[in-house]
Length: 115
Length: 113
Image (cartoon, rainbow over all chains, first blue to last red; front, side):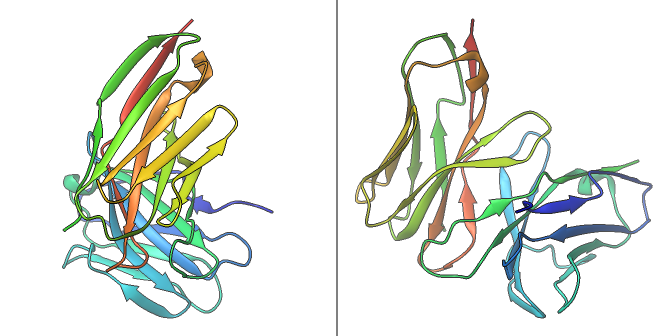
């Protein structure tokens, strides 16, 4: 049973370009979470999605960031017009369903560098 | 707003020592608390998950305890090994959110041979 998969593992973009980060949850998992780890900082929650629905986006920056989890295919975190401050490690986690106390399993992360 | 704090920020010990990592959280209304390990440049590996109704969980040389009323959790590592060197993170799920993890900043552990 493959774990959570993220690609690309490393992504380099110039300021103003778009970044697309993909996350494939574990088999049988229908809930996806995105977290961001800025340099020298802890992990911060960004968004929680189920298939075709955004459940909680309280941690998403108001502009330039969007996320989706379509019926088919991976979850996508999209960052438009990237700036240097977007350089960070972006982690995706998945869980099979949401009950009180459900465990989240993390992917290896995508390390975004903005030049 | 939930805040999670981990002490110490860094710890260096000789191989074979038993050690304790501390985690505290400000809002005791949590569903669970999870301990992770993060190696440099890598993702997170889940170590132990303690439900709010539980007092402790054990896996091999690791034992995690939870005192929800005082807002504290500890991770005990027995007979430490150089391979245990990593950053250890604790994270809590609040009852109000139901899903999102709030992370501490981590304890960077170095076990010297």
